[in-house]
Picture 1: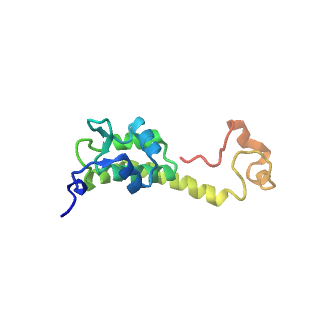
Picture 2 (picture 1 turned 135 degrees about the vertical axis):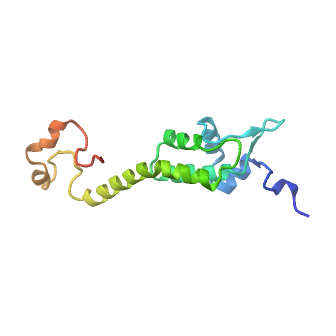
Picture 3 (picture 1 turned 90 degrees about the horizontal axis):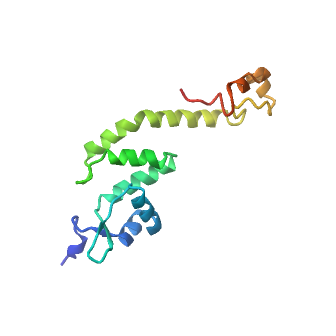
Length: 152
């Protein structure tokens, strides 16, 4: 006979979520404090998570891996429904919202990959090629930081 605690409606303990997601318990607590995920509390004050938290955790981890700040992740997750499991349509809407930002990140990463060997793009004149790409340090007059790598 199947265990009734393993059904789709059965909430998961913090340990079960940690095991299933590969995220440490302390990280789950941090995500909860940062309002990235939610937990309900039992009468004994133990955390219980709805199963859709596993998808949210995957989204958080992948987003972090590509450099998306937590504030942007939080904003994206806030656009998902909180009273029900997000549908495919909900995730598609979030994806469309992020498309432009992700394309911009991809462009910046490709530029970094292609230009890193020659110059960091800051006008420092520290490499031989800088004198050719940035004569008289003209980029230095635009202020500190990289100038050739700004994504428009």
